[in-house]
Amino acid sequence: MKVFNEIEACYGAVRDVQRRGGRVGLVPTMGALHEGHVSLIEAARRRSDSVAVTIFVNPTQFGPNEDFEKYPSDTEADLAACEASGADIVFTPSVETLYPRGFETTIHVSGLTEGLCGAHRPGHFDGVTTIVAKLLNILPADEAFFGEKDYQQLLVIRRMVRDLNLPVEIAACPIVREKDGLACSSRNRYLSPSERSQAAVLSRALFSARDRIAAGHKRVKELVTRIRAEILTAGPAKIDYVEIVDAETLDSLTEVDRPARIVLAARIGPCRLIDNVDVNEDVGRS
Ligand code: AMP
Image (cartoon, rainbow, N blue to C red; front, side, top):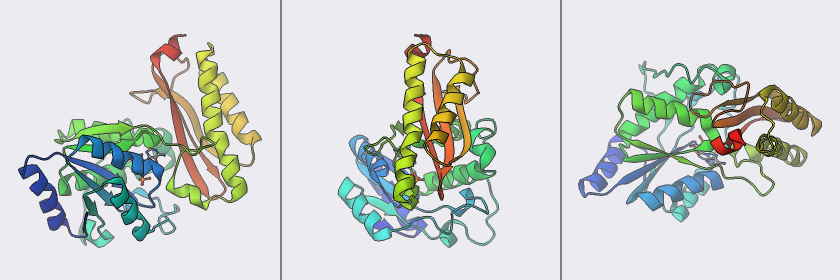
């Protein structure tokens, strides 16, 4: 496994693989790696000759009052996890390397970025699309792997790749969960033991809503009211949103009558947590 801090050397390593006919898979991360990230690296391993992982806490996707300064970081453990899960190339640039003095460009995807996390985190997705575009230029992979955990982000990146004709395939990987259902997240480590057990309510509420939909309940208002109540019954939480949206357009639904996603964001203790589950066409029709 080779670790690079500089752009040119990293670009050269990716191109070397491709010149020899190899396929490169890219896994962008912000570090503090957990089982969710490992599943992405393993998926890339299965589908690529060489796996590249980026570890970069991207300042431009954090708002002024968000946790950029406190975002967890453990480079030594991250490199060990990359090595153990089969990465070949790791890119760990500094902020100055990626955003040198005079940096002035932003990539903005409209539409898909307006609701959900986009409404609660102004500018967040501009930061995401700009850094992902840069990483795809520095590491021009054949395929890039993203988690469904960040469902809106996945759709926004797909849209950017299509709209800008970026020569990369985007692969979606399923959400990896802890034993009690909580979606793995770098931020989970900041939950106290009681907040940690409370946080399991998020996935419980999503899965019970999915069961209710399968049993024939299709009115979004009622489903959402129940999810909110279930979350608040488990303890103090600030719910940013709970919505049931079209799985492709993220448009809000009033009836679950097509492939959909139940998506939520809530703050428990110091952490803003997001989660989602799919509601497939068959479930929607039942
Ligand atoms: P992050 O380091 O949080 O920016 O995440 C990097 C990538 O890992 C993104 O594509 C995330 O969607 C993905 N990811 C994070 N948590 C999970 C999870 N629990 N399951 C699957 N993918 C995840």
